[in-house]
Image (cartoon, rainbow, N blue to C red; front, side, top):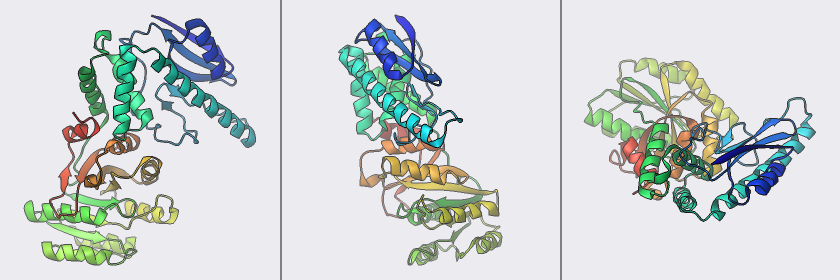
Length: 376
């Protein structure tokens, strides 16, 4: 194997030099901006996949639009940082030019990998297609694959079964699960409108109050949605647990104090658009009541791509402790759950798959998630 660093004023110029010296079978290992007007691209010929590639699966930057500039790694592509001394107009032009070069680089890398027609490249492409088909972000899929291929011996790089098992282990290292209701406490459920927060709370209340015989109180601040509080009151009456409606954070704090003797206090909140700054401030006010309040972000498993990423990034302004994904019964693509977990860097608590209370909910496990992300 021969590895060489190529430096040029633009990524495109570096790629030309690589093609001239290494030919069509070169593989790009990394690219980065080393100074204003200078880029370094590391390429290899006769690439030995047993050598490690320094990539981080969980830096959380893959989940951004390619029209945005967020410092971090897109697999083996590092987004350049704009020099602070440039004026806004110059920055804008620099960003446009660099993004164009990065898109060109991505296409050239794809061409180089696919044009080799080796067993390794064929396996790489096949596994990437499987991951993307299951809804895993293409940039994250590429990163998972590169991490896996670079960590195994060369004789295993065409063994699909072995690779899938290895990839599952790689993904397992980057995800976590946690049950925020495992001990006494207060949990506020937040998230976009229509994801099923109220039904999720009812399911959890039924499990803990009726099956586990714990003392539970339900509080709601959802006074925006018609009959939302009434819906929770009906559930509370059936289960024999108190339900309080708080019009503001002052009342919410009062009700929390009133039910201080309870094992669990579950708080329902109105659905918020991630773009509604005033409503998001209201949620931050809940966090200011007590550091004991945990926040569970409820998201729909059917939400896709940038909308999901926007929700995760906006609600991460809160001290989110865990995630819940709903509506698993409405589709059979589960990659977005992994996308959100990696971006949020938070554990997954619950999965729901229907409207039945309390049957259609389960505590998340790594085994269950891995079967979702990489089904056999």
